Image 1 (tube, rainbow, N blue to C red):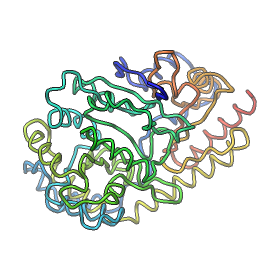
Image 2 (cartoon, helix red, strand yellow):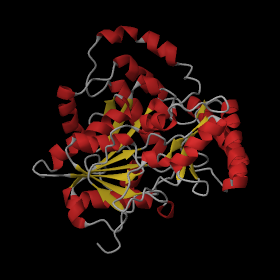
Image 3 (cartoon, one colour):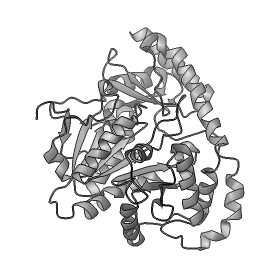
Image 4 (cartoon, rainbow, N blue to C red):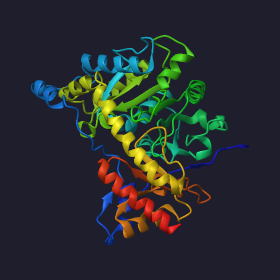
Length: 410
């Protein structure tokens, strides 16, 4: 293919996850200073103050089998939030276009099966496209759907998003699902409306589903990122057609610091989601009604989200102050990670190991979040991922150690 983007085909599912690989890399090391973990994206800010009251008020509903398509209150709250956030002109079908999930991971994991069975059930070896680096659940989705994963490198010169221009039409003909995150993990880049619309047009032309992972949509610096539903609305259509081939997935894990609640949603294409609901009615666990009640309350409140965002932005200001003299600007437009090019100091594994050994700061090698290409290149090998989830004081200590080590090791 002329102008073909860097990509790899075949198995993308590693034998162990990135954190298991990191544990093996650091096994037996006694760091010179007390350890500070900056690896995982587990929010540590305060829980919403209404959580306990809503749970207590709905405790009796733990006796009930929850409706697989969600309570009317849950669907209405999610639809109202999407309408307010993205200006959708009432196009979300509240009854058929919103589906509760056990966290967005459930939907991301099993969406590819539904896409395969609904769109191309007779395709002998369907394709699932995902970015590289990628959230490991996308690769699991391809594996579960018995599909060929095709990983598109997401590099800085392409705004850390998969390039769409040179995709082979024959490949797209076999594609059942395309996974893309905006804001992206780990880079924190944002897809523009033009990017989303180009992808939507490809999906409709070649009959595949887009699973847009927008779980970091509310963790941004200044400007709210545009969403895929917003882009689809601008292309035209009614409640039945406006979100054709488009499903957005989101959750309360990042937005509301409720990762343990395991409550998220899928929204968009009502025909696809209706059929998926029938499948989930046989195969998937329902979301407990009290959890849906908390979610309905959370999506109707922005105060706790604004405070959450403020706390992350305080930590980004610290990162910019400490690290920019060594690395240049390090602040992405969204998300709560730093994606730092440390190639001057070695590979991501070498730097992660040295950092932990000499400073106690534990970071994730970028190579562990990506798959190597056929030529051996890995788009994450030059980077480390640093999470900013820890409290402000802990974060500042870790970043100060990191900045000092980089400065002394340059």
